[in-house]
Length: 432
Image: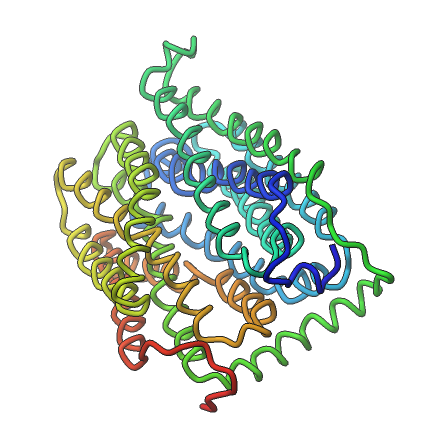
């Protein structure tokens, strides 16, 4: 597929590479759900670093999350240049995939109290996960014609919900009833769960490498040229984006509120563990989010079409602010389940409407360039929130106050969104 053909509105959709590409989302969502949002949070404070305060264990985990996010974000310009001009997307995706799968599998090794080793392996897995996503995202233009980019992207998102949720369901049953899997106890079950994620991630990634064809380039610049051009391209795209005021201001709002969304996703289970809920109950609540989130995202998207994506996002951001405040005060398991259900109703919708609103505010001929920057900005998400929650929690010696502080991100993001209006895609710059 040539670059021009990949951007053609009317080019036919070839289902084999599309399904193969989307199956990588099915594959790596196991890490996002079972590891990132699930067992790493519940297992860390109770097994790997017991005996310390909840504030300290939460801060340690959040700092590692933030560090890996910053590291990948700083690499993103170079990685993006390689993805665009290096013609080695699949090769570099494979390298990060191996990094992530190995790090995830190694999480089964650290024993009780070996928190440094556990954090190291978790960091390796998280870097592999985020780094591979840069190249996975960039392969979208190799499998989808321009007129089908939203559909194919959403299809991958949907398979991610289902695939991650399916393995997570198995893992939750495994931890809740280890005897059904001939395992001696729940601790062993969690360790085996990490291994199943590694195997699942590797196994379902095979389809992408077999059936997705990366377009060939006539020449491949050297790595030093790619690195230099990567940073230059970020500067050029940033300068160009500033000429489209609505898109630029929206992106500023997006940085804050999506950071809050991802912070809640990454810390909800750890917070529940810190205030005394059982691991099995926390996993069931996360499972609820996974399966309710898929249909809720579709319904929320329909609502957004009726009232406009900006208003839909504002509803979701406002709901998240209220949910976060309420969550910081909850005491019962029933309240935790209710709040998990509430999050599921807005999580996917906010993510989907954010993408569609941004798409509506940029010129079609610059969609690839601007969405590359949009995805790079997304790599920074959960850094501000995780750091804020960790620092506030330590200073106030309260995980509840730490969680409540995340509400500020929704307030700032929502306030910036209120300055914008729904507009059709611009044909010429609306200069800031």
